[in-house]
Length: 358
Image (cartoon, rainbow, N blue to C red; front, side, top):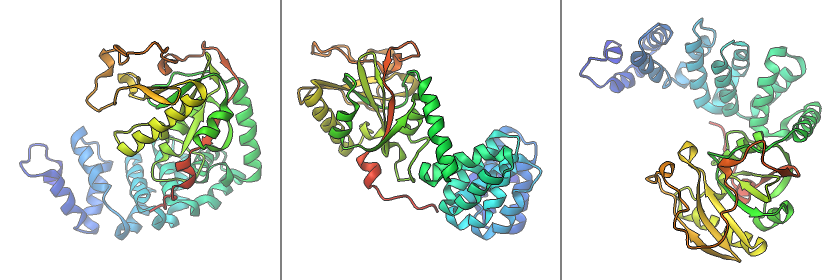
């Protein structure tokens, strides 16, 4: 323990952590006490990291830790149970009780843990939706949706979900797109886009949640290995263009997916005349990385991790007279918009095997 927490020690602190995980109950209790203590930043990080490696043989201790006075201990124990997946199903009730913690981080960790425990938690979560406590209901709803999507909701909650989408759609406005990747075509023919890209199961969706669904940070279908590729957000017509936002149309420095994206651009441009692709680069800048016209790629620049898009115009020097589509980073609530957005299932989301918790 001394070597783990001593920042001046010449020994490898991670090795000390690995060894402590092998030493049994006394070491578990000592690490738990360190997590609960008011330690400096680096020793506290090391203690939490070591705690995170305690799994099945410490089952009873992990359950006890969910009742510990320290919120840091609660959160670490929930993370351990999350990593155990479906093996931790008996902890469902204890994790749900964390919804009552005033710390949003603890509540979120409980949601993530329940999601990894999987469909076996759904009955207990639906019971919270029916009977409360009232303060737990919103988190229970989020967990249910992230485990099984709208189909996992009770009939009453499915109706509430439809009403929620309808109300949000009425007040929907465009939002800037920084971290998601997308392709864009002129006009507003969403149905043609769905058919060309073989997207299915379309349903109404508004901008805010649509972007989260498209990035894989929130989903409406059971989990797959790459959530960001499973669903797409097809925007309303914004300033004369429709954007298809999804990790499905992202090069991802992966030759197979880069080829699929090129193919999608060719097919879209064959129907719409032109199609632009944008690779999401976060706050470093969103780069237009390819353009197709009448079924052929006429310009592209491969996005690499070494590119610094923030200080340069990625479209400078493009040898084409085609307009550069619409810049996703410049969308705002002032951008003209017509119609309503759609969430759709991509071919990958439809065909990929579901990820089994644990």
